[in-house]
Image 1: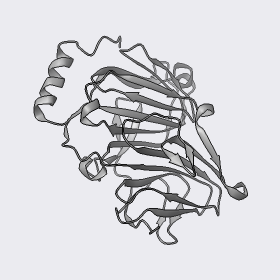
Image 2: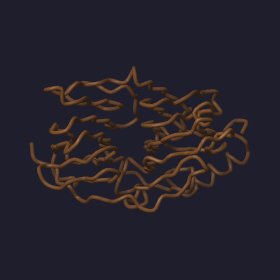
Image 3: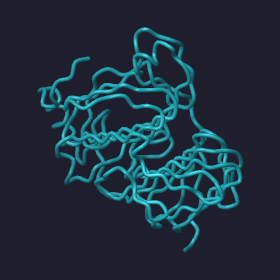
Amino acid sequence: MSTKTLSRITKPGTPHFVGDGFRVHNFIPGTSTMQEMDPFIMLDYNSKYTFAPSQIPRGVGVHPHKGFETVTIAYKGKVEHGDSTGSGGVIHEGDVQWMTAAGGILHKEFHEKEWSKKGGEFQMVQLWVNLPAKYKQSEPGYQNLANAEITKVALPNDGGEVEVIAGEFDGHKGSAKTFSPVNLLNAKLKKGTKTAFSFPAEYTTAILMIEGSARVNDGDTVPADNFAMFKRDGETFTVEALEDAVVLVLSGEPLREPIAAHGPFVMNTREELIEAFDDFNKGKFGYLED
């Protein structure tokens, strides 16, 4: 197999707030376009940030989604969420919420009540995964992936482990069901551990350095909170932890379909976008109390 070449390393830009509960750096589409990162169409990273105690939980009130999936990964802190299908709950540290907005859903997400009263360090990732056109109008769905249920692969020589959220690593299949080939891995590496990852050359592949720093392909160093994207020119790359590190690895097959996006809706044509706004305004996404 040939080596997948690192394309660029991107530093986190100026953060902004989503609602009053998520202080994020936007990497997709902020520094890479939706088309370039297909099928990944949005990546917000709430790097470590300390929230003061609050009796009123911070977060984002009721808002719509249509045409894609939202994946929320909790590293520090707790989030309480709910949607118009009746699904909901608390995302604890290490958990993953995989919500399929598909044909339309209303959603809200706030800091969990008791965690909010104490405050503390908060760190989260929200990734949007595009849906193939044939699934954009399907029924909404929800996967609650508690950390204990996520597939874990121990690395040799007590080098750490890889959590396989979706896709596959070293022959072990991930816990989430996806509508197109998507790999999402949390690599928790001990200092000095060197791990190889392999994906088809044509897949869109990138890493987000959650903790620590790492050397890629015996060359460039990716510091904490940086995002690194690969070219579509090989299959395999290595990550060597220069200190204890957590690396979010994402790789997916591009859908290669038209993208028409506006706010919380991602469709294939302008006409479908207009229809999405019309359906939302007519209350077709259901009801959710703020």
